[in-house]
Image (cartoon, rainbow, N blue to C red; front, side, top):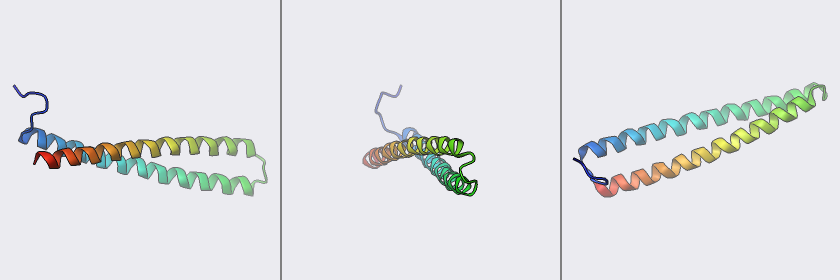
Length: 94
């Protein structure tokens, strides 16, 4: 039975799998952040074009988008830290 912390070819393969999952997750979250940025720009443009008709709704949308962007940014930074640590551990084991 494998003990905790034991490194072998199986665990190295697992770390590669986790690293790939982290890369894909970071990429997907960054893509979502780009979409939210476009949504925010569109919201501000439409708010200006509509002369404040739905200003309150656009302001609420803008605040919500900013909150979500902040959360996604924190998640990406956290995943980057995990990815860096995984890379360092994997490199030290090899």
